[in-house]
Length: 337
Image (cartoon, rainbow, N blue to C red; front, side, top):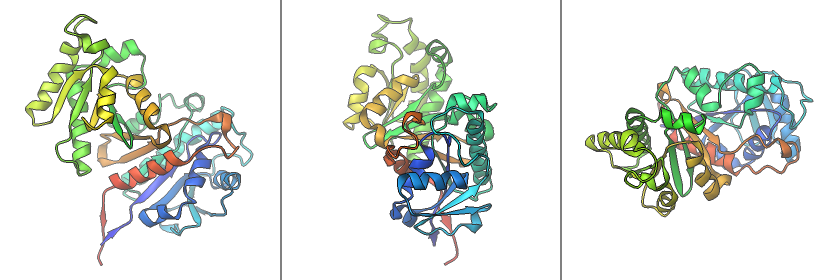
């Protein structure tokens, strides 16, 4: 008998819209039919968010996963009790930044102990995170550090497009310096392994060029495509992976969106993020790929939106999509029938 996966949902920065979109998403009873959602955060902040969005759900404060009620109409919260009830909406604070880190660290602890099957994260604020003493560019790098993972990548998905990145939160000049044939190969393989593990046979992987028109045979750039990308693609192909490119980015995303490819390898942050957000920011999901221990992490693909926090304006579609992805990618638990 296969049991429902346990999804740990971290609250993110409590001054932003994270608590609201969690409370709003968990008003949907169908989520409880497919998983056991456990919020990791502050119960009093989730209670306030439920009031903001008009949810009548009971907020059930717990210290262990085994104490969860797991029924619609109840939000089970592993309560770390780190923040004041009157935390200001939309204000950057070291308190909220540190708390966002602690929620994630607790989620990783639970995932390592196999008490939860996937982690789904609400957004954090990088400035608040840094003020709180945690000098990371974002969720992905924190997760890599907490799991002692070196070879990881960020994957973004919408209903019509999947993108995985060679580099993410670094400046453009540094990003190009970091791209190597080895990195290209490893990310192509991560894309292949992730999609095949999810049940897709022989996924088609397309690699973006670094320069305009993918260098156009040396016309643009200094041969970066031939030096940094082509050898990694060729190595993957020699292992039977269906990887091609590099292709000009200005047409590749259109081709992938219409179904020519299953996933695109982007060279740097904005090259991959911009098309995803144009094609489906409301249903975009951010997935961290390659974490040690097989830990699955999905996230909304938007920020903390401090300007609308506490106003019941935020849309929960991306949070629901992230929870759905966490369910789909979670390992199956077998129990005695």
